[in-house]
Amino acid sequence: MRRFAPSLAAALLIGVLFSTPIGVQSIGVCYGKVGNNLPPPSDVVQLYKSNGITDMRIYLPDVETFGALRGSGISLIVGVANENIIDLAANKEAAAAWVDANVKPFVADVNIKYIAVGNEISGEATQSIVPAMQNLNASLFAAGFGNIVKVSTTVKLDVVANSFPPSAGVFAEPYMTAVSTFLASTGAPLLANVYPYFAYISNPQDIDLNYATFQLSKTVTDPNNGLVYTNLFDAMIDAMYAALDKAGATGVRVIVSESGWPSAGGTVATIDYAHAYNQNLIYHVKQGHGTPRQPEIPIEAYLFAMFNENEKPGAPTERNFAWRPGMDEWARQAEVWVGHAERWIRQQPPEQIYVAVAVIAVTILLLVAASCLKSSKPNTIVLSGLTGGGKTILFYQLRDGSSHQGTVTSMEQNNDTFVLHSELERKGKIKPVHVVDVPGHARLKPKLDETLPQAAGIVFVVDAQDFLSTMQAVAEYLYDILTKATVVKKRIPLLIFCNKTDKVTAHSKEFIKKQLEKEINKLRESRNAISSADITDEVKLGKPGEAFNLSQCQNEVTVAEGAGLTGNVSAVEQFIREYVKA
Image 1: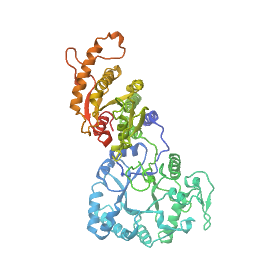
Image 2: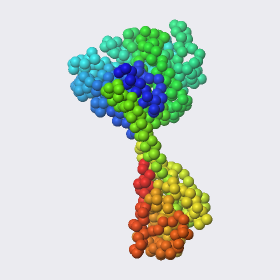
Image 3: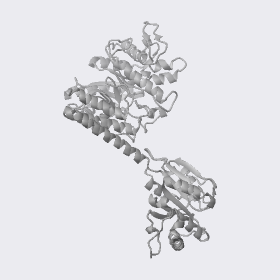
Image 4: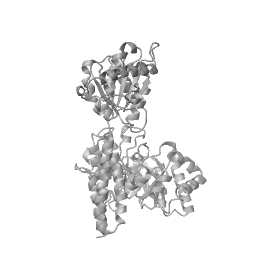
């Protein structure tokens, strides 16, 4: 019972949140970090553990990741940066220093299996691969870790010429023979990045998409040896094995250091195909079989990758290789919660476990509900004011960074959701803003009443150049907004934006503020004389017996100036981001 209950508890917790795909107990996952929206390594390690992932590949040594992996039991491939290969090849001291910095302090608590000397190295640097591997291997033995940590390099399938049929595989460059010889002498595997996706898109006429994604299709028979292939993945690995055999390295094992399918950004790069390929690959590896050429050697493979990497250069597909495409940020966090909860549960007496499960499940549901409520905060900014004040130009500046060629008087409501134009170059996830430009014509004012309940903020646009001639009408419109029960009850903040201050004859924001307060004070006195029974949706402004000023409003009211026509709208952008957080 003590062993069964924690497993059941964990299953219940996972079931509350989401259904998990086939586990990955016998497959690794690559942990790329070329992104600015990734969780910290401590949470990543918990994701690996909660998904049963036992192997990780990282592309560069990282102290924080090493620390998170201590005692986790997760096996690790550690990469050496391509730009360091030439120095490590030429300098034995540099190799020793690399081992001292990146292996020696961690190997007692972190299961470092392989060091990958470079990733898909090409050009002249290929001549430095073997010397670099030799120096690192010697340094590992000198430090006492040579029998624990093996040194290899990572190649792509392009190193093999004549990959079809698989038995025709042969290394295209002589340096690969030297690499193979070194690996055979040390007992290390060859790390190969195997991507049926790229093979398929380069030759869709001859390769069946189902064959490339482990789905039912016609089999392919190698005419040279009669071996039958049911999927492209095995055929690509066997082409590598054939090349190793021809290089005299028959005993060298091939480990698939990367494989995956993009979920966006290119031909047949969809979530459905990515999911099918990844889950079928996991299932294929979990069977414990080898390839047709090497049936007795179980396949070891690493899915690429744990996350989409939004800063990775190259084609759009490069930024869309997450092994569970479409997994939202909340789901990542939920998995971390599950990992923490499972460890806690295993420490509890059996009689307390089911009660604890109920408490944790309710807590998680409340957290998810709170997150939903938080995400449902309004993101609508209402642009209001009299016709001709410049609201529509302001709308275009916020959205497009353009005034759209001068004054635009709109009798139609502009309504759009977008990232502010000034923030388009910012990195990371930015919350879009829903901006509604309500026409200022009197007969269209009911449109304002429909929009205000959803508003996070109101920008009241005033024509600073033509203010005196419109002052009374502006004050009446502003008064109507400030006294609306919706605005007061929800304390919707309001920015009075004095537009067109680039004009020589424009009035200052201080002058406009003072005059509006005077006009509203007059309106307040006249409106207060009307019986409250005649006013159904109006809140009284200010304090009795005191002259009105904007600071007396129950919602926050600020005044700023700028010029929509010239793009000077930073005050409005700051106001928006104060109340619609990016």
